[in-house]
Image (cartoon, rainbow, N blue to C red):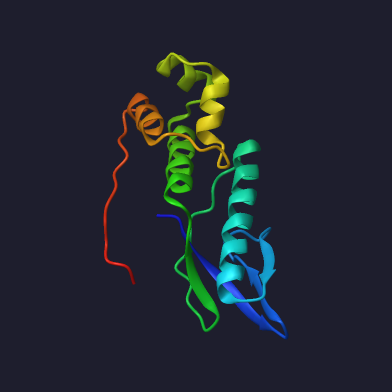
Length: 142
C-alpha cells in the first residue's frame, strides 16, 4: 500500500536519499541499510506533518530507475495513514470520529499520530466506525 519509490544517489561516502513523491524528504546514510532506515524515518516525519496540516497524503507512484528502490513503511504507519485517508474521503473530522467511538478527541489524535504505538484493535474499531474494515495479507518477500 504505502511502498514509496526512493532515489538513492551514490556519493563519495554513502548515499543521498530523496523521495520523488514527497519532495520534502531528503536524507543520507553511509550504507544502503542506514539510508533506508533514515528514509523511512524522514517519510514518517513529513507525512505526520501532512496529517497535522490536514493535507492529502501522496500516493506512491510506480517509478522505476537505476537508483530507485521501493521502501515499505511499517504496517502500523500504513494502517494509520489509511485511516486518515478514509476519514478525509468520508469528510469525517477527528471530533466526529471521537463521537462515533465514544472516546475523547485526543484519543483519536493518538490513533493518527505516526509516532504513537497504537493498538491494532483500536485502529480496527475506528475503521468500523467509518463503515470500513482493515485487511491484512501475507505475501512472499521479494
